[in-house]
Length: 201
Image (cartoon, rainbow, N blue to C red):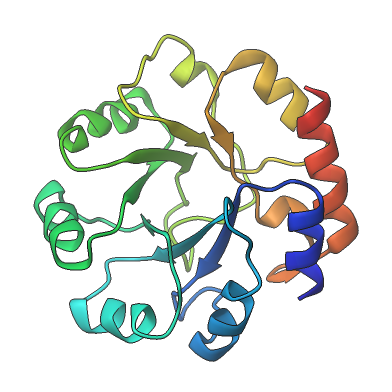
């Protein structure tokens, strides 16, 4: 609740909920249900899933008011299309980036994704596909023009978000590890400072 309050007071327009059991940020359905009730109109709740089965999505969406889905796994364009058709929600498709080839993958999702999210690609052996706390080379996106709104993610902090936004012009920025006291535990003071840094830019 304290983290949610800090995000809302700071002007966040998206609030993310991780529904991936292997993540230290995984949130239980009943807790997410309660928190989502506190989100005011105009702020979107985003459910993050990794290669979810329909049954997993059913379980969450039956109880939690989610406005958008973020698919952070290896979902194919066909799978994204299926999920959109079945659940009727807009989809953010996340792409792990370490080389220019990773950015090119976005073109296969033009007809099915509503937003793109560019995150640092997790290294081999890392236990989750994102949330590494590492940035990728922002220069890989400098010359790119996208047909959909997009979000910059990956290792953003109060110290580097200004630099990132001097290089790139995303529609939104996404932060998780950069506002944590320790892995999986949000720090309301860091959330406030991060949002203030974004506003200054």
